Picture 1 (cartoon, helix red, strand yellow):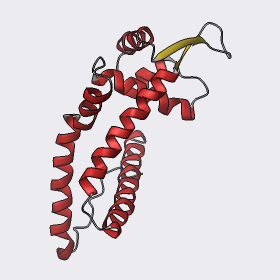
Picture 2: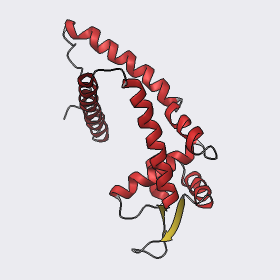
Picture 3: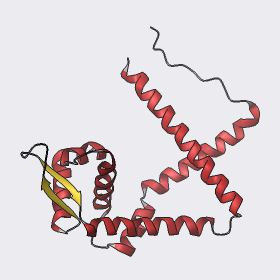
Length: 175
């Protein structure tokens, strides 16, 4: 089976400028996301005692609880792509601050699981409010149909981005 990378056909000339603009905008967005502007703003407004890694762990625990029956420190480490000892330290800090709690696994009493406390859930809700407020400020002067169109197209773009990424990861794994 030939696993040589496939080269995509060049885009039609009329799309080249649009594709370039999207690529440049993605680079600007990556820089802003890399600086964690929204997260830092949320922490300043909602929980100045926390740092970005705390917010990351809280969000990972929330997301994992949607798909996992039990969230462990190992789950946190894996989802954040960090060393388990680092994940364990941050989880311990958040338990100490009362935004996470540890409990015993119902499936295996030797395992410890991690859950959001009501305070942790409220903190994440406040962070989400700050994030949505920032987005609302950005689109405040947009016509309603522009905001709806952007939301629909951005979601479609991200779905496509994920699909391309997953396909390429799958192709690399098969090699």
